[in-house]
Image 1 (cartoon, rainbow over the protein chains, first blue to last red):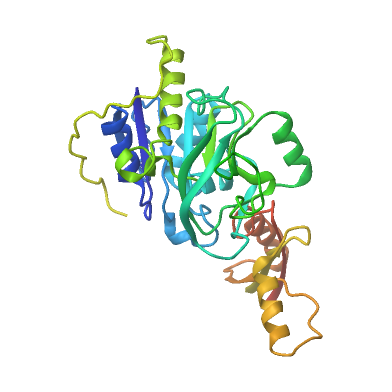
Image 2: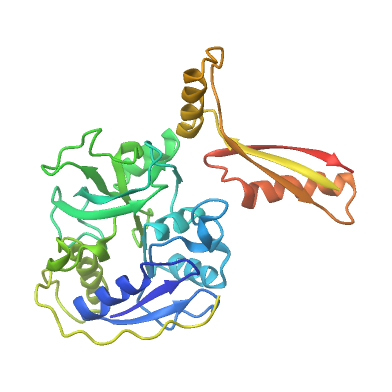
Length: 257
Length: 81
């Protein structure tokens, strides 16, 4: 499957995401420059983490006006698979591709630490390689990850099973301490109603190799590969890959800001 | 024409920054401070527009870009005509 990683000025997890998709998951991967309205025929668009446009105005608020975002919107509306990680999640919210908004973390601190998240719904394009209730250890790194939605919207998200991941403790219990940033309903990751767009604050690309302390992030990428392969009718669902392919060099960064 | 736009969190949205400022003021002895809400100020200069056009443009700008209507509200005033 072909993955595209969007590069905005200020993205800083673009290479990590590219590396994991290409070298760990063994998928064809390309960078997509924010100024070029061309998705290069990818099967999936990933909006990586970082601080696009310096987080000016609000996190993700300026990136949504990038030429590529109009294409990402069209792609998503046509059913294309879109994953937003951290700043990518914030951009999807600002662009209206996902409902709700982000507030500053409840303790007003930039949080950079491993957290546990629980799979709430494993019947999705982003979690089918995991089990319902499975606890994943994946790091976060953000200032604005305190998810907010008005009560009626929250009720709708719950009703439609759109909440895919919640912050929990190591045993999978939802506690106030485990909900480090103060998100309503402990939301760590949610998808749109159609199920083809997911945003998550934890960084699965930082937890996809043993040497980095956790391989749990692979569940998300493998789920997406499973979904795309099933959609294309090429292969049957398979489990998370554990062997690591040889590393091929990453391409140089494209364009200038 | 110069316009000042004030963007702040809706009353229903928790403002931890405002609360922290309030607590700091309490520490300094300003016990009469009941609540603080923090926001942003934008001063926008407009060219070749009259008042009625400004009244149309400003709420659009605020709603589309300056504020996130899910969590924020805005007010505005003309400070220089």
